[in-house]
Image (tube, rainbow, N blue to C red; front, side, top):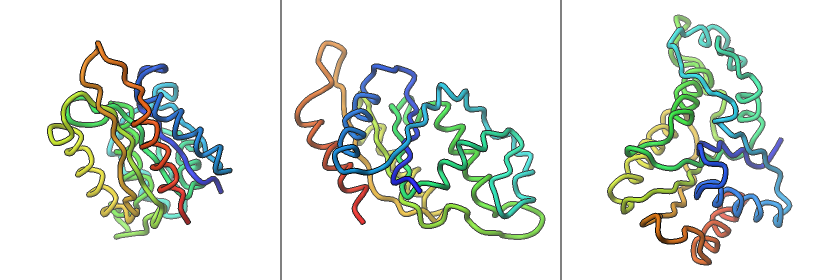
Length: 191
């Protein structure tokens, strides 16, 4: 079992979100924690088609679109971290596609057999975000959505860390953000 899987939902390899992910994983390395980063843009994550074929098998994700490795990695992790810029008040498209597919493939609540189990029940879930607007004008909606998502999926919501970029003329990286994301990595991996 790995300690953390990071679902990296940024289209920019050298962007702000991935800078935070790099600092986060650097602290995981320092703590001796195991992790895996899944770049959702590299995976070409497709959206859920609501076919509900995943509901026939209560033992595994069984998504008709495949991506078993992604689901298996999520199920093998103690904690899940979604790292995404906030675009139009929510996560990026591949992150949303994965969230939609996980809610069905990993929660067996929707089939003809009745209500089944949550395959990922009890896992910790956290959020790393970057954004331009003040937190109360955008990222707050994503965080509220993730709290509801976690409650529905029986996950433990472990909190969020966000970094604001107030304009393209200023540098995003800062010692304050670095200290914050390091502290967040420690919090997420506490036993």
